[in-house]
Length: 224
Image 1: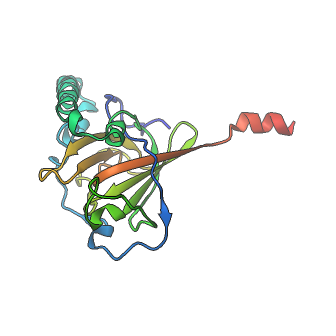
Image 2: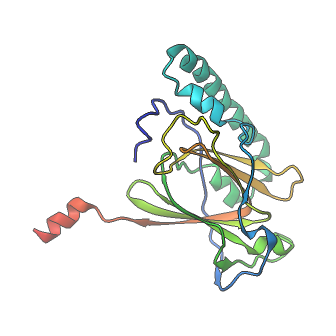
Image 3: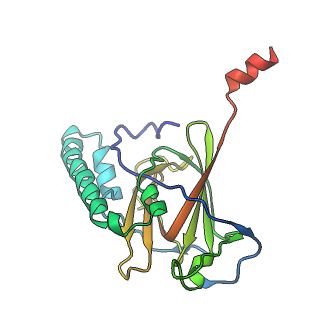
């Protein structure tokens, strides 16, 4: 689906994942970080594609938008250099997080209390933090895509600033960044959404599944 009508420009980075592991259904243990933690708004959570730059990039004032466009192009280059600098530390499933593009995907749900437990043997992921999975469900290109993150800490959510100028209805994925945690315990996936909110997901691995939706034109042909 196209972005809100009040957004006139879109730069183009941002991405996701694919790796196969065994999921074991059952009740997860009561681990403190399972529920999302709501933080105060901050423009600095996103290192490269922050909300303030995105607002200026889509300004109705051409002079402001053109200057922001130069900054946006620099952010794209800086982010690519950042990815290149950490690529050797990424497992294959994390690299795939940086390669898929979910720009404009509609957010259908983000499960705060995971329903599956994933068992990963040492030394790949020692400790209990690897047993919780968060699920993000999206709609993109006539497909429902479910993203499963294996977490090492609590998810943090940052609400939009009060003067966010764009629509907050029908939340969409805008841009994302993958980073290494400061203490090197795992990776961070930061996502900026169309309602101005940001989510930071601390993960060690991730998988995706996709279900294609039926084409309504094909359905009509079959019925005729």
